Image (cartoon, rainbow, N blue to C red; front, side, top):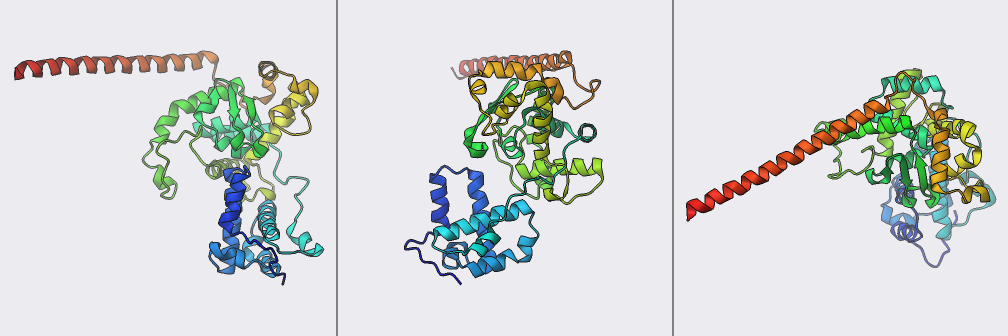
Length: 358
């Protein structure tokens, strides 16, 4: 059993506060906190007292517990890395073999399935408007699923989407682009979104959780909810009935769409542009760095046809989209006129009441 030898022992709260000051994302901090919380529950100690119960033996017992064994390989790797790092910073020493246990290597090959065009088309056939917009958004932008769940309405400007640094992996934000197909489905979703947000049955559907009063997220759902919807669609199409969240067991995942983007976009746009849009490190050569946002967008739209997934006869035409926009503008104009009429009536009523009093 390795004792704590550090002169200054940091509690979980102090450690998480330091991570926040160091610029770690809210999601990373939450992941660390959850890892510490489950470890504390296993040891049957309050989270505030975890720093007094940090031993290698305790961690090894936790590693062999049923809870950890049920985790996916990636979740296990993240949890053990977070806990072991916290322990080392608090003075707990590991020998070489012990480090080999807690430092599980990230698999070099992902186990999730590569997307096939017919599978994506079948999912689109079954999807509602929200999920059609979500799937085409992922395919068009190559965004990570976690980033997509945090994109706000204000981040979308026509066919350009800004990925804020605070939600991007490694704080590498940037601009991504929407194909005509993705923009069409997103327009349809944005028309339905206000009614969907106000749905009174939402709380029942989501186990009583409270919806934010002002939900500015583009898709109005958490990463977990969107992933569940995606998994249900895939199971309905594929028939494997793969357990939710067990992405290491060979199923299609939202992240698979990112792989689809890289594979297909590279055939018409060039690898440098594609890797730049995906914000991968190691590919930003001088030629790409000097490319303006306007040039990147132009080249993207020139090759965007490689990312279309719905059948041509199912895609909405630009004419239909323009018609929908005109109808929306006309409705907005009618509402504005009614509001002006109401103001005039209120003014007339006020004048009549004033005359009566006098």
